[in-house]
Image (tube, rainbow, N blue to C red; front, side, top):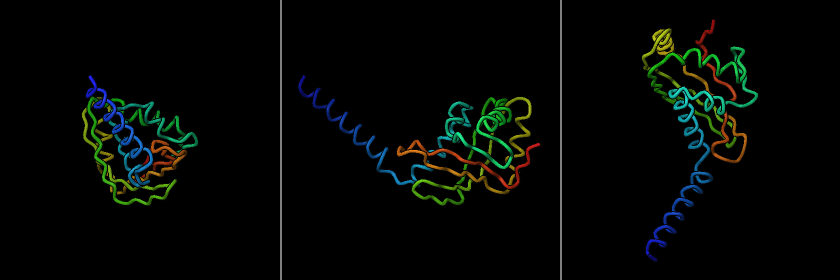
Length: 157
């Protein structure tokens, strides 16, 4: 019985050490890139509450979106997909302790109803990268939030 307790204690200590490293040992670059991938995964899953939670309360973009309308329009554009894969490629990054800007080329694959084929074709034909402006709003690695998303070629009717 005693070896079982030692194994449990060892596992707990390993998990605590891993959580400590994950929370405080990663660089701002690692934190932002992890959050960027989590954002892409939330889009692929069409997890709109997660997407909304990754945008700052004061989110504002050049298209006139605030946090709620950005998520509503994303839901309209991506909601009809049955399958969706977003392939991001970070082409530029500038990361400071509490601010970051990523330029990301995005390609999409997916099948769905309605305008899904149009959305895939439109996004895949954009030649300019997407700009993701991140701000760290707290001390935890998951406190990185998106302040603005922009693409110079994107035209929203």
